[in-house]
Each structure stands twice: as structure tokens, then as C-alpha cells.
Amino acid sequence: MRRDQPRRPGRPKTSPLSRSEQLRLAKRAQRERERAAGMIAVPLKLAARDAERLRAAMTRPEFARQLRGLLDDTLIEVAAYENLAALCWNRGDRYLGAEEAFRLYERNWRLVDRHRMQPAERALIERLAAHYGNGVLNV
Image 1 (tube, rainbow, N blue to C red):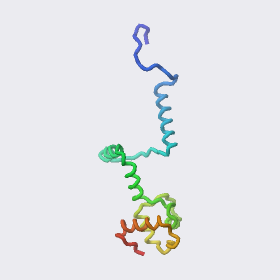
Image 2 (cartoon, rainbow, N blue to C red; image 1 turned 135 degrees about the vertical axis):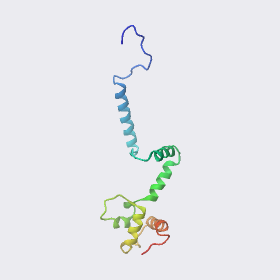
Image 3 (cartoon, one colour; image 1 turned 180 degrees about the vertical axis):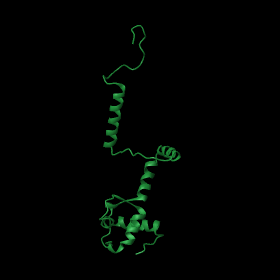
Image 4 (cartoon, helix red, strand yellow; image 1 turned 135 degrees about the horizontal axis):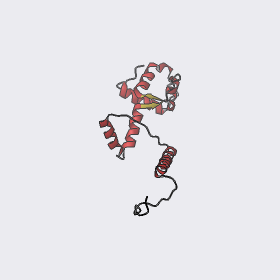
């Protein structure tokens, strides 16, 4: 910059780092805070219309609760249910699709320990039977 040109107005420089380096460090610190809070960014490829709708839905206050409900209805955590975990002894998946879990219970009912079954697992089987078996568990 030449001496005779007036100095541009703006923020005074408060750091010896360049603006791009400051921005990079700020983004890194933000990601670390989110990780510490248990949040993870999930890349997701959607059709443009669906992506736009998802972006709009995410601004709603009830979105996170409804998403959790959808995931609870769609995926079953195997380790949370003793009999299901025993039926999945040869699988490495942490989650199982709800319909797949129902079919697994139906096919292997003879191996399910009904006497020691926890109430939460009974409720899960009843919910799965109502949704995927029309209220009937074919055993």
C-alpha cells in the first residue's frame, strides 16, 4: 500500500494470524465443542427437493424429538434386548431394522427365553407384531 493512499477502515488487527487461519482454528474449535457435546455431523446426499424440505424441517423445534421417534421405530438396538442379542450372536451390527428384528424373533421363537424376558423386550415384540404381523406373532 502506498503512503499517500488513505488507510481502509475496518477492524483493527488483534492477532498475528491471517483471517483464513483464524477462521480455520475457529471451525476446529467449534467441531471439538460439538464432539464434546456428543454431536456428530452426518453427510447425507438427497434429492434437491428432499434436501430443501429437510433443511426447513430442521428449523422446527420438535424436529429432533420426531427424528428420534422415527429412528426408534425404524431401528432396534440389538444390545438393549437380551433375547435379541442372543439371536444376533453371529451378527456384528449394532442396530437391526425393525421388520428384520420381528422376522428374526418369529423364525427363532423356540430359542427365546420367555420366562426371563424383560418387560421392555415384551413391549418391543408386541409393538413389532402389531406393526409387521398384524397383531400376530406366528410361532
